[in-house]
Length: 207
Ligand code: IMP
Ligand code: MG
Image (cartoon, rainbow, N blue to C red; front, top):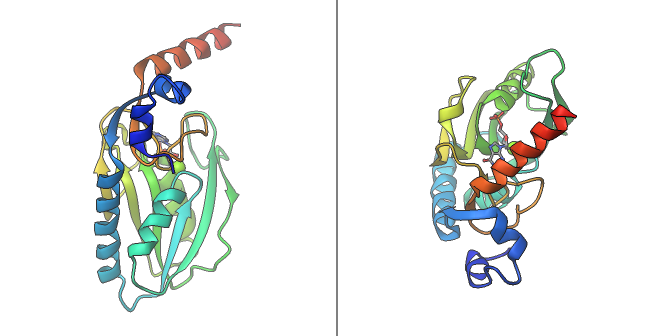
């Protein structure tokens, strides 16, 4: 993993491309590790003697998952699910597609969904509805970041690491155009980068 310290020290030199994109540190690596340990300890207590299956949402939650499970002192199964969404209106009409379904049968099991960040909540609410049909004993959510300000679908979050306002977060699994997932800390995306993206989107739409 790239340490946040390296990025700061090499700012403007070796990692010039990153420093043009990454702004301030929102959550430093050591704080993330502390929080992840707390969450793992809590989950260990809550799921003692329960048939637990941890469902990781690809790809963003992978880094969080690998750290989190080291602090869950229980026997459990890990499975993965991937969803792709199209445009702005996520409905049942096929705008959300499961691109990788679970390998495991979750009937009668306690499902814990591990997610990187919950924003509008639309992806997760689709996923929960889809999983409920399979009759698990319970479904709970563990997210590293909760950005409640933009929430559209109501989601009950049992385990949450950090709260975030409007900022777009990058690092520790969270991507910007599929990159920067390997950063140890979580950074804010520079406003200039967002502005440039909006401008280029506008010009594409006007063509
Ligand atoms: P939602 O359906 O709006 O809740 O979308 C949640 C998904 O969008 C997350 O699982 C992330 O993959 C992605 N996402 C939302 N906000 C951010 C962010 O700030 N950084 C990186 N990915 C994000
Ligand atoms: Mg995600």
